[in-house]
Length: 206
Image (cartoon, rainbow, N blue to C red; front, side, top):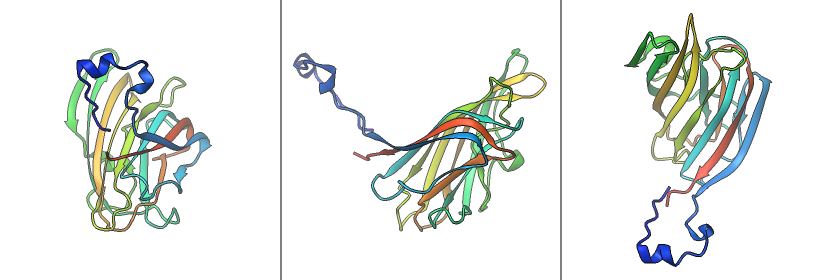
């Protein structure tokens, strides 16, 4: 999103907030889960935008301590098995203040090395009634036929062990293909997505 600079004179000439430059993020579609095995976006990801952003709002799992994961498709959603290499790290803090940390996390396939598996975006979401995860995933230039497709994500969730933890999860990587990525699927590592909303936006590059 471009940064717009105004000098004192330009600001004084504004007659309403509507004259300020608006953001270039456009809502394409949204889906709401209800005991869903997965949520797939099979349209709207094309060459229209150089950046696509998914926003996750209160994604609640049916099972306890599972990961929210995703994969891409090069054939419109017939298969979700694109080869990818990724990295994952997180910060955490226990609810009672008794434990905390910031570390690279390669356990439980949180990082992938030339794998077609689903990439985790979170670590161990609890399924208590008030637990969920929220965050975003950005994919860059998915329609390129020249470059691999980079992505990055940041999500927060409550991890439910003996004592609840706050997890701040960072994941990034690339789809190692020069084919277009034209569909994306989200699901839990085990069980259904009990509830939650996912919104897909397109972002103009300039």
